[in-house]
Length: 418
Image 1 (cartoon, rainbow, N blue to C red):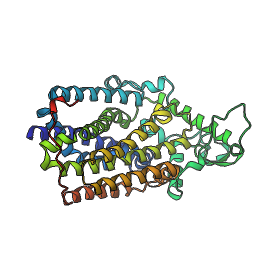
Image 2: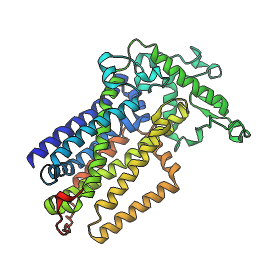
Image 3: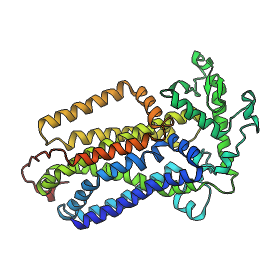
């Protein structure tokens, strides 16, 4: 199994480097204050991966090694399946990353062209703008920041910092979201006339005025980016590392499902490794359940700045879909991977999973509000460091958990499976 260990260690080392590098470049380029404000706002991309994502990566090392060895030695045409699956996953990762960033990643990086997103009207992320552009942004009209009543849009960094300050003191930002697509054939809802704080303006206005400010915010971000002679290093690094992050998530998704499907075969050939595999899958799946939380925290924060005008396919469609898929994946792995264990373990896993599902369905908005406060734009600087340490402690302690004796099933012809 030495070859499988070396191969998985090599791939996982590259993924770990990608997780850390993108966040490091962000902090290095924008400085501790602005960099962390952006990292907290985009927590699903810049805070999750170098902390909880690394825990999931470490946890899945043994399961991934067993998976590689299984297909290399014990599955019919396994070597070809493994190779083709690896290549297809890599290609799909590049495609998904291209869709999410709305740019031709390889071409743009080599030619240093502006993202094609701008050509199609999409709005750039804040960290795609050059630091000098953000720090020199005077608001709109220029120089209005001293008098809120004259501003059509406050300076970008000022709005971001106020959003972060409010997120510190409140649980969630749902109350600040405005409906900018009211039905013109129906009466105006009373909530549209209420004066509520609008973050692009940093004052209380009605829904119509705030929606106008959000649209102006999005449009002028695109104009600022388009006029830049040089864009941020973080934007290029993100484009370079995003395929690796997508590959990581697809890989964990596939490995988790296939290990559950080959559960009886694993008992046959890798009985002595099964406690480590089970612990790794359990911790990895639990860690990945945290990603939908940070993802939804970002979507809620983005809604009060950009509104529906970002033009982002991720914010408007794919983000909620990915959260749902990976939330269900984590629960399904817990259900099916432990289906051959002792009845008590199986019962508790299903009970806890069912309770989590009910909580997510009944108190969904409240869960996301707390996510914004503690795992999104309102996160303290030490929050994710603490979570990372806790995750590592849980992972290390798992090796001292009592081993559960694997229940062998009758032998089956592996070559005929699938």
